[in-house]
Image (cartoon, rainbow, N blue to C red; front, side):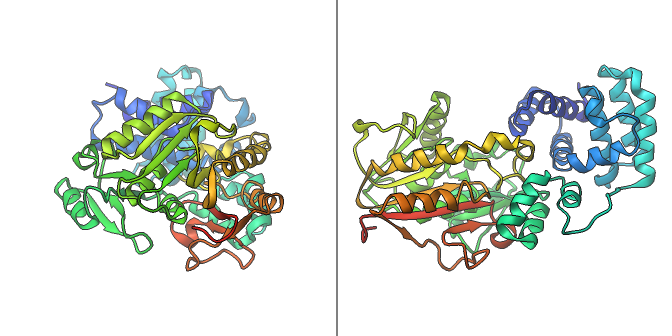
Length: 444
């Protein structure tokens, strides 16, 4: 049987070498190594996600004790040193001796036996000296980038867009574990009833002040293993996404289009809010993701969900018109770094073309909307070029649409936020952007 550290090593190596998504890699490896007990599985998750969260700071500290740049290390050796450093600096319950010795053992069995003495020497110096930071201060983007393990370009983007205080708070929150939030399937059960059902399975859950049908749960292993999940009593969804669905304000019996739906969370919440009436037509460009929507709707017992293989940027007259359209467009994901830490290491050039794609999808959405209908544009990123600038351009070039202020009671990060930018430190949600528009005035 593989040790928890070996499984964590394999996960981090695959993420480092192949650019794979952390959640998919971890889930796959934990299934392959199902003999690990719950404690070991939790250790794997803490070690993998914690190391990814602190990667820039870890590499900075390693660089202080190496004679070569860390980027020139072999991937196997680099991964072992990163894991060991994270355990020494941030996992208080792991004895320093164990962190060093187990890292040396990993080196011996993972193509790095030649460097076992190096691993031992470097990690002992890390242990002796603790966390080291460069010179600088809380207004220096380069210093902040290392302290919070967030690339300088993201820090600078946030400072320019939201101010230094919000930028620092966003970087701090990105290092925290995200809560597990679920949406009650109100077509089957109430929030209070679900709390009791979950308690029977040993799960602790509590209501939220913002969203009455959302529960924050804890003391759970895999959510998908819960009987309440298998019976379709809830689906996982952050409060930000639920607020997005509420902004659409779909009513019973209406027709709603969700143009970029997969994996389907917003589709399901909308369908439940409509009390399983009308039609929620969910679209995605990949067949495998369309199947995710179908299977999710079936598990939840939502007969008003219909899924289609379709490119949201290309108009298809056969789909007809909708009362409401949701465009939760592909984005850079800078609002969900704490859930997917590898997002922070995207190449900046990867997001340069996103605003044009997002705008095309938004414009295409208008062709499906009835007069008086509501259109919602959303992203899970914190980047004005993908958010407010897309919406400002849209309003300028579409005079038949007017903005609708959503969730006016929620705080805005500044008076200049014409739409709604959700931030973890202000709203206790993922970072998210929501804008709503009405076609030809009045209406819904």
